[in-house]
Image (cartoon, rainbow, N blue to C red; front, side):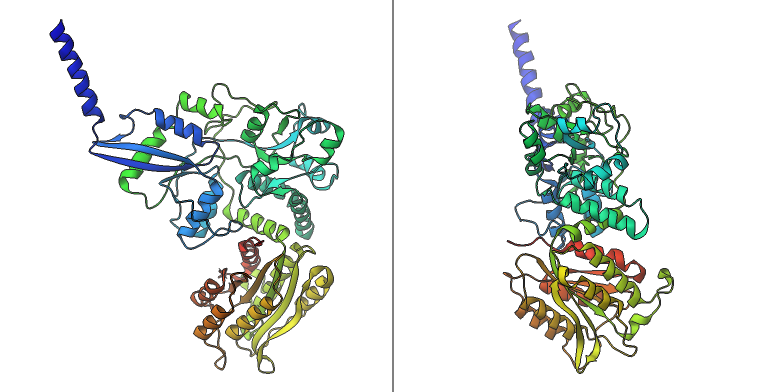
Length: 556
């Protein structure tokens, strides 16, 4: 018996040693948005060596909680670019091997920046519906919990009822805020033509009055008590995730939140599992093993503990569903069209971020060319229309001016000031009239370089610290002014003029296929800003909005 015990014990020790011996250890870095990070960390920590092993290689999983916007900014920065509304990456957040943001909309936005930035396929590992959160006393006045709501029902209340204080987390930084914004803007867009646009703009401005940079900041504005005065002064309604409502109510506040599941449902958060491009083969294989762990009842129960649903909308044990929450068993819907997201974010940026902009429009002879996709309107006409529509987005907090340029447009000068940069409150009509009177110079060339430097210097002379200062140049050609500055001379002069303490962005919009994107990028890379090309001039309106959305936040 003694010999048998010794032999049995020795065999057990031998097996343990041979099973855990690692010829090499692979560490997979996982950056997961904060609400799901605990469930990911607990699941991977509990996995056995056999579940996380590649032949003789052991796998370690390093899970860190990371804000989705921060990682998105780091990915864009890795490719020497940026996403509208995020600005530059801080440098503290690194691109991980595996990224689990809260929404596939982050991946969609990054894909529009460049191919290969993020994977084409990223399966969902959790979900959370986006709801309209209201304090229960306020929700009851609308008919909750017995009434089912549509956006058409709520739209007039949210945009014009002065008794409701609406808010939203900055949509360019928060997926739930973006989802709610898309739903609300879609309701406003139902009206046709300019009426629809103005309805949407009104809705965005209404939300903007109560916007917050961070989700925690917005949630803190909900009423701490249920007395009439406090309710009247506090946040009344905001698009948030179901998970946020569950977490808030778990603290047992005096005024719990009601979750309104509005129809049509906004895009839910789907928590994609993205193995990032550039990850080694071994790490990518190990990441596949990690993904395999994120299934089954034990994992779903961990999701339920933090207020999240499974990828199919199902719930685990202990899920604290808000009152009136539907039973969801359908797969999570796909992300919205990237073009739609870009347009809504661009409109939001134009509406909410005060700017000081000098618009500089090409009036060379080539701008007389007709645009087949615009019903035969000329390049000049579609460009002016884009500027007019953009002007309609800007509220009276904006300042704007207008120049035109060609060659020898005003004596020897290639440019001419039509309206100086000034408050829109004072000169909106003057700008609209000036835009309507723009006529191309039939035999005029493109004096791009001299005009760019003069415009930059003009904006710098009146730089305003309370606004985003920018020069927006719209052109359909290359510089062909033989007596003016060369490109190298322009770049040298711009380098001398750039002052980091007084940033001014140049946003170049190229119209058609005759522009030199390389030259425009060299200019905008020197000053900060960006270059956008519209091969089809008929799309210049969308490009203009996207360009405006690029502007960074005001530096205070």
